[in-house]
Amino acid sequence: MNYKRYFLTSESVTEGHPDKVCDLISDSILDACLEQDSESRVAVETFISNGQVNIAGQITTNATIDIESITREVLKNVGYDSAKFNMDYKTCKINVNITKQSNDIAIGVDDGGAGDQGIMFGYACVETENLMPYAIDTA
Image (tube, rainbow, N blue to C red; front, side):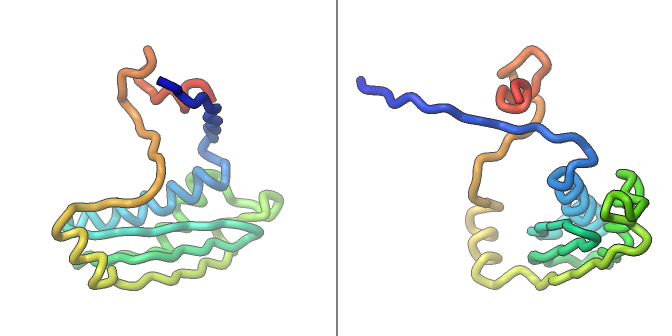
């Protein structure tokens, strides 16, 4: 057999990194929905830069959540509390563009379950001694 070799690169970032903060905001929105409605469907993306937080996506839920308050709490807990970081939880602008899940996606999820594109690295696997995925462990 003729196997093709390739390199895979990976990066691991810590709590204050903008990518991690964005994930934490999106995850916190999901958690808030699930606390009130275990059948919530949440697909939220977050982008932060220069004193602004942009949150967009689709949420279908019976939960009542305050996305701006959730976002400010996450930023506060991470330590974004000063203009010197170019992000202050008290004064940053938060833009929210959330709609309900489209009917086409809802039908697909009803039939086949949740899905998305991409390579996902998670936790608690047997690839390494510390149970972290190999890509995270070596990054």
